[in-house]
Amino acid sequence: MRRLLAVICGLGVAQALADSRTFTLTPDFSGASQVQLTLQDNRWQAQLSGGDGRSQSLADVCQPELGQVQVRDVFTVRGDKDYLVVQCAAVVAHPGFEYYALNGLVFQAGVYFWDNGALVRDARASLALSGYEGNMTENWSQHHWYHTQPLARQKLLEQVRGHERDSLKLAREIVLARLAIEDRDAVYIYLDIELPRLLREEPLNAQTAALYNDLGYALQQGEWHSAAYELFARVEGVVPQRVVLKLNIADSLWALYKRKQAAEYYRSYVQAMNSAGKPGIIPQRARARSQEPQS
Amino acid sequence: MIRLLWCLLLLSVLVPPAMAETSCVAEFDSFLYEFANDPQVQRQASSGRVLYSQLQGLQDNVYPLVRAMQGAQLALPLIAPLTADLKGLEVQRLTDGHVRVLDKRGGLDRLRGYQFERKACWALVSIDEWSVDESRLLLTGLPKMNPAEEVCYRKANIFLALGGVEKYPPTAEFFEVGMQFLLCAAASGNPDASLAAASLGYSGMAPALSAEVTEKLFLAAAQSLPTGAAALYGFYCSGTDQSYDGPCMDPERARSWLIKSIDMGNWESLTTLASDWESGRLGGAIDLSRALACYELAREKGVVEYVDSVKRLQQAGAQPGGRCY
Image 1 (tube, rainbow over the protein chains, first blue to last red):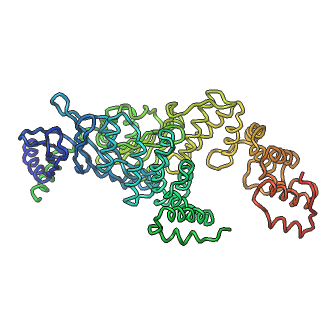
Image 2: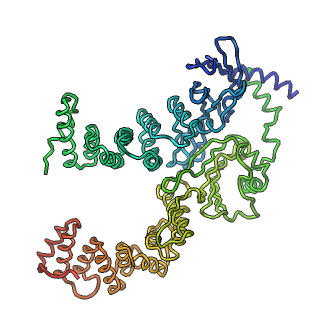
Image 3: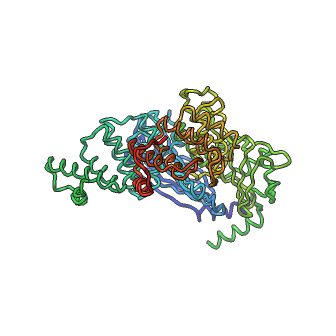
């Protein structure tokens, strides 16, 4: 009786929950140009197909979850070999914990490659691209930094080259991506953790100065002026003549209410821009603030 | 849709929920006892998704990283077996169906937090692991500190940093264990560890230290650290009670350490000494001219100018050109 009910109702449930999504793979995944994902009983199955009519199925590309798991993206990455990446997400909601409210999103990634004619899941790379973003308590929030396709793509490429930790270049992409969605806290949290390590592993020099300047810019735009100024000052020690840096330093000092010091940097910036024949692109604030009394 | 609802209703009547086949203890303490002592119950209670946090990173940037795990991915046992009582466990009932457990039985440097939610049965929602082992430490060798003390010092700094941000649940425990490790690091008299431990005792974040221990730590710090000597002045004047506002308890010793801190280059102490000459707090006569001399000397040494104090002293008749001490 129970089995019969399960068959009858199982069909109904499956039909009711059935969902399907199709992604075009560019570049193709070792010949497969399309992947169709179908949700049945809260499990996503993938069907890869190519122009030659061949197809390959892939079971359970997203781990079943308590809530319904959604496929966010499927794409290919060309590294030492071709990789297929499936990005999924599921909602986490335990509001009953109040202060310890656990609310957020679980990001699951599946990274696959062909090995001797079989599709293999790369457990290490899958773990690296998976994570949780949300609250653990009222004040303790956790971020998953590789939630978009470009970030996941670059993280995977670094991962398969043996780099466990984010490169300076990836760090720059991460903070700029957060800045783009006005997630200012995330910019600070990421750099608070990663900046000391980055400075150790990829020291500040003429080659890396522009990237560190951009990290400082992200902090500044996130209104973390003190941290931004600290970083800009270090960059200045390496490339003191960098013109855009003068403006950045001036803006940070201005925001920190160090107006006289800021004015000196604004004047230096305006002078450098005039000398370079680019007076037309000097921001109005730089001109106005450079007039601040000198003493 | 109606067909689906009917089927779900029929299933709920005729098919018992999977969890119902297992023992599904409603009372939390009983459940916790079963959970801690039976790996099978651990596996059942963690059959869904569990958020698992663990410390990552090195020394100055150790932070918790949260991962979403399927229960089967978690190695058993999830918790140490429990004896009859809940000694060493802090059980916080947030609601009827939400409980947080902090397990201190492994020591404050091996804390584990668990959160349970009750729906049909109690289920494990998250585990926070706050263990700091030596793989997280950057050991470089520190002067006046043996290797074991350096391990303590580095661990202290990690726990105090975790506590300092005041966003993780066991903040009080982090300060407490930070203090324990600082005291361990200061055992053979390292001045930095000694000063840090004694100062932390005043913070109100960690348990207060006795006057005897505080004096011993400040004395160790004051031998080579100007700020240590200045701190010892504060101790001899006010003891360990931060709110103390009476006359200086031991003015002679206090003054000698304050002057020592100045001689060691702590110019900020000049303004303290000036203030004490002006108020007579260190005993003996009030000496406005000495107070003025201290402010003048502080200005010469680049300490921020105390223009108002100088004016006040001059108006009160202080004579310039005197000696500060």
